[in-house]
Length: 306
Image (cartoon, rainbow, N blue to C red; front, side, top):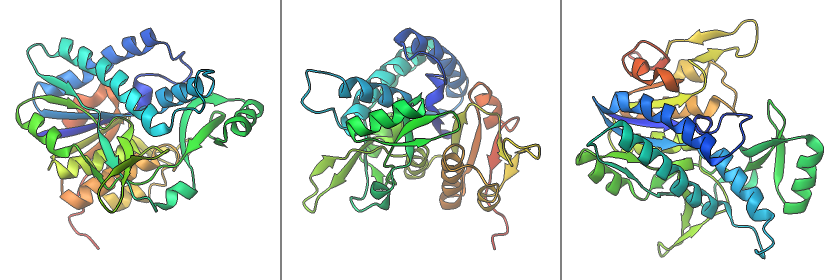
């Protein structure tokens, strides 16, 4: 099968961990082990989240006395694609002896008039106490909002229209290469009437980009890996129960929180609706079991659509 994997940003940097390089190197071994088990049997394209890393670089850039202005988010996203892509390439190279692995810096076209630019809502970076978050927002012109653990920066998240390097990804995949790409949803760019590209200060949701890329690559399976074993209805309440199998409509009605599981559920639903393929959401360490139907939440086509 051809599988596109969307790896959560918390796989490289768990919540509460110090964002040191060695911490991320250690975490990446776990990622490579889980992906290698699938790569022995299937063609793999892997995308990944970068919100913790972009948030860290944004703080460093804002505090750099050598800069007259902080780096914009599109360039910070490109920087993290290089860093995380290198970590993943090296780890997968070691876990898959003899297999070609390539990491690409990729760009995702978004609409300049996307309403998301007026409603920043994607969390990036570390958690702050409220007073510090407000201070940083005033100092750097950030938007901040509260999530389940504290206060964080929020940025625009326009929807993906197309991944510019899809043709290159396809060529590498057809040659048997494991491809690492579309980090953080890809560097967001807009095109003018002449087709010239310009980066924008935003980030594209990585799961929606993965779904679009999977569709364009004619993948058989979209695998979204996170830090919980299943999608749950009534998550965090005494009524919580796992969703083991769902159609796109049933998954949307599960009421997934917009700032956590919601984008993952929507990405899985879109891919299944548009392609008739399969998608699944589950835990990183269970990646092999999820693809073989023994774990996770499977999202399948509705045999009797209304």
